[in-house]
Image (cartoon, rainbow, N blue to C red; front, top):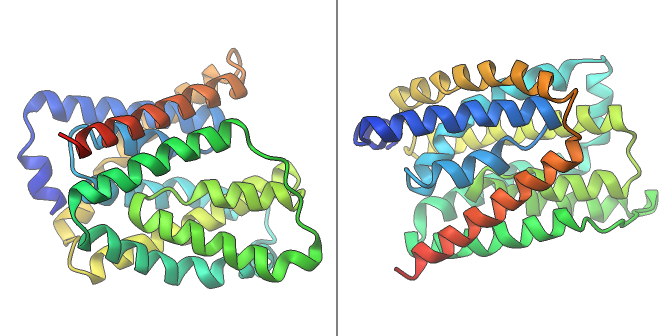
Length: 254
């Protein structure tokens, strides 16, 4: 699927995809998160949604390995995240089934609406607070929503962000927790796509090559972080997400 889609593109589209992944690396270097928020809207300008998501899988796994393991105490962190993981992983398989099984116009419309709503919610992130007693239902609910959304769009992050912020997670724990959840989600996404026959070994290689421009963009982002307020850049990323959603809605009706 992915290899055929990439080989069918003209050289100018290839160059645009490389530039998009380079920009994605810059964003990751500045704000630490946001790779799918940038790359899904950009890559769907050239590829259909399933191929775009397949292209993202290996880079998402690779860019979260380091953050997931840094600082130690990873097993303890995984135990704390168990309420999310218990529903996240099976929900991803359901999301992938929907991604591959529903009509493309309907998929574009659903994701277009979702992207716009997510951008608005994250711009005006509500300061919800979950008590420790609410962990038994808030964690599985966040995992379910993140898994369904991630399986259809590779965007696991927004429900996880709301849940972690609602628990009052400190910044260092937040980064590690997001990396663990994103790694688990993207690895499950890759397995689900491969298990469904939607991703062959050649597709895996193409996705792995996409790591290169991201890695080139990361140090640029870290350098730019010194002069750009991450919050300002985050707003720009969310505006880009909203515009990508509006473009998917436009294509739904054309």
